[in-house]
Image 1 (cartoon, chains in turn orange, yellow):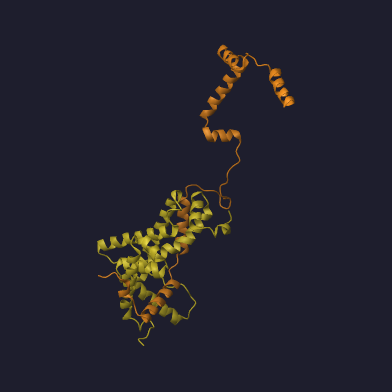
Image 2 (cartoon, rainbow over the protein chains, first blue to last red):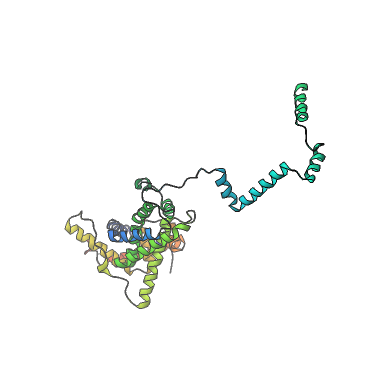
Length: 130
Length: 197
């Protein structure tokens, strides 16, 4: 059997009559009853994954978040334990540095406790002398 | 969100809002898409009760698909046409397997438009029934193609996607379908208000 649509083309009059029938059928197309629409709407609400109150729905927007929320969202609760431990250890080392840290500081800066006045004087001299 | 603010939203946007919990979107989608599913189902099954079941089933599948809907992969209306068509074909196949008839002319709704005078309405109703009869007698694929092209006004590429065939095959099916319709209706031209002149 040929698949060429031209072989099945109707003459113009027949085609026009058929088109008129189609137009009437489109105009008189069946419409859903209110009962059917109510059933489908009830079904849609029953199937809805979650619901917000009618009229109160607004599209989701990005919330303003503080550092704490940001950190939680980024790393989760478990990260806070590690952060707290790091703070405590760092504070302890600052108050009473172990020998290893003291010697490392001496090697790096030339003394165990850098003299702040020396540092500032060097900076001040640099400014004055250009 | 007010209902009228959603009226202009696309089907895909409404489906997204539905999945996010907006009951207004559920109502709008129901009223926007159910008529389409029902029209196609009535044309393909020629049975209002069966068509209502199919429309409800098709819409249920849409609600279930909403949470995972990917707007870039499918147009909502095309998806619904495809699901409705497949559900109709399943029912037609079941009826044929049982050896029953898929056609129930009494179940076809009468035209609801009260506008024209009674005799014109009668003729229109007769023509609608004759067309429905002739469509029901077409081979399944011709009936689908003619319905989607000439009663739903879809383009050939859209029909090709829904029926999963080539555009050329759609053209061939609609042409043959129209030829068969014309032959079936020719014997009733006078009854339907057409003269042979």
